[in-house]
Image 1 (cartoon, helix red, strand yellow):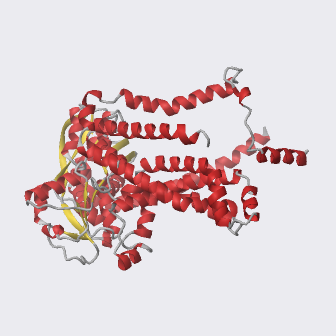
Image 2 (tube, one colour):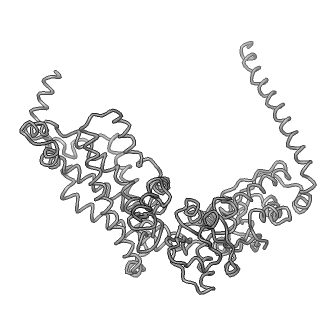
Image 3 (tube, helix red, strand yellow):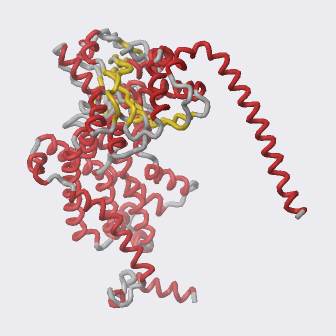
Length: 286
Length: 275
């Protein structure tokens, strides 16, 4: 049984991946209630708070809230920083994911656990940890300061660092999963034909896992866009320099909840627009 | 029958031992009482003798250490009472009170946040100011940048953090700066006073404008520098009994303790000013 299964899977893969049999998954052919009811409840649980936000939006004062230069400044900064953090995550995270998926080394499980640690760390603690590492008196930061004159806290670069710290694990996990699902024999074939391991990675592996990378990048970008705790702790809050949208929303909440709702609506609209746009192009394949 | 009887015996023994322990404990605490009774006489005279039951106090975060000490003292003076605290930002506490949170006493860090509660009709009587809090500059230990005045904070190259203008400490700092016509370019507007202080404690910022009580609570991790302009921006702390209280007697007695000479001593030791 098992050998023939394996052979089946192998021919499947060699013919271009296991095909999904689409005809049979049509809706309406008796969706079991024990699945349908919790699924609908889950959907409602996620969507109702967003609807409540829309219902309570002060629509009459919205145009005035949204045209204020402060809002645009914060939104612009948010988009720039989230994109830069995603770029950093891609440059460092994809090779890290490859290392975890393709290279056997002692303590690999431990390294993987360390990589996912920022996912469970409260972001504010992450921010404090970043201060201790990269701050003016941090264990790395003091050398950055005395050798290059670089201090990251309270700068826009600091925002990018904080967001990348929180968002990169999402990308690494997503890319590593795709790499594990991808057949390593394509790379092996490429190397037996004379390609170096790096060329095989660049010309064979990367195109193969592109949808996974895209999905991971979108996740990381979305996480970076909404980042609050690590950013305000590590980079502080200064309009135009480190005040991203989530920070502006939080501070507006203290004095003017209506403005806070309007601001969150902008963030929501922008992220839905970007995610929907990307989904059509990239994420269906992932 | 015999079985159940035997089974019951052990819990009885345990209960007996527990009761003995409790007796011993209460003997201890009552002896404590008698030793401190002399100094407390002024406070207990102002409170009612028949006070009992639970008191829930919502108080500004800056009051934490002093109020916890006063709560213990209150329970000691009025056996049978239990004081429960909820500390937090005054504005969010005010929001939970107007939202119907069950509380007997509200002590806020600014008249503005108290007004939210009185405007909603959730307080009884007029809130009384029981302490005031003054701003102070928190610098690195040893004051390496030789900061001596508010004006010194405007020196270029100095990293200063302020509270955001939306929070009481930020509003007060801005008032002091405006009164002395100073333009200060901070590196960050922090979300609350503790966050501003943390930036100095971690040595990421050179100075912060915070409350005197925060400098006091931080111990030797920061050094405080007083400045005369702080007189323009002193925060009053009002306290009141809430309308929905289930234990008005005890609530009144707690406020009496806070405003008594004994209570004021605890508060001024924490760095608060007399009203």
